[in-house]
Amino acid sequence: MIVIMSAGSTRQDIEAVQTHLSQRGLQGHINPGTERNVIGVLGEIYPELQNELEFMQGVSEVLRVTKPYKLASKEFASGPTVVEIGEAKVRIGAGNFIVFAGPCAVESEEQVLATADAVKESGAQVLRGGAFKPRSSPYSFRGMGEDGLKLLANARDATGMPIITEVMAPGDVDLVASYADVLQIGARNMQNFSLLDEAGAVPKPVMLKRGFAATYEDWLLSTEYLMAAGNRQVILCERGIRTFETFTRNTMDLNAIPAIHILNHLPVVSDPSHGTGTWPLVTPLAVASAAVGADGLIIEVHPNPSEAKSDGAQSLTFKNFATMMSQVEAVRGALAEA
Image (cartoon, rainbow, N blue to C red; front, side):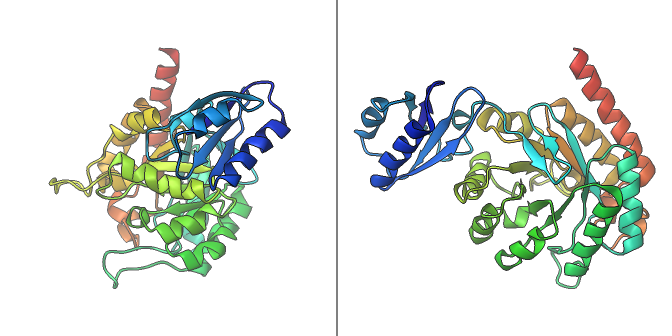
């Protein structure tokens, strides 16, 4: 259920609604807007509640939300959510398109700084890099840990680019949040609900990647965990799903981008690096993602992909990344003129 407040409603009117809900064991989550304020009602709704709320001062309309995800549903917001990243206040959503780019894993100071400089020169706005790496094999390189976080922070200081990095465990959330501007929750952890609760309590944006075999509803319900914990600065990321095809690492689900925009109000980013797993396909799928309405891209870039300790096969060289960026901008420019 959502409560739509009238344009002339006061703070006292909103507080009265929230008090009414609290006294009945319900939670009221307010989503402020430029034209209206919306209060999402969470908890066990009883039949008389709608009439009670409709007669309260400042209430314009009360609507039932049939979707199991309430705060992430499109009805909860007055328009697309815009997420601001870092002190630079890089904006994504509602027409603001950004590119996150950098190495899959942080390997050295030289590697991170060279990559940060190159992707920034080509137009990326946020530096990505893994300090804690979830790997299928326990014998693969699993990241530098806090030392990797420090190298990312140094690169931010040198370039001015905000940083995004993955957090894997609830106990690491505070540590990673002390360095990162955006917390990334990977596909393997999309339904790690303890991790979602902890990340949702942090006042920094969170990027939530879709799980290998998750439906759109599964994905949005995981988003609901973050939002119910208090975090409204959430970015969704489509990174491909598991199918019977073996030529690519995953199957890139381009349907997800416009579909999720229909279902929810949060920005949606595409990850064609993981979505394909092979670098020659990254640029075509990045261009296609922009064409179907992605709010951004997250791309793996490495100075020497053949020597990368993680995911070299899907990493772009600096030159290939620059080519990809020019093609993406060309497509977005053509759509803007259409």
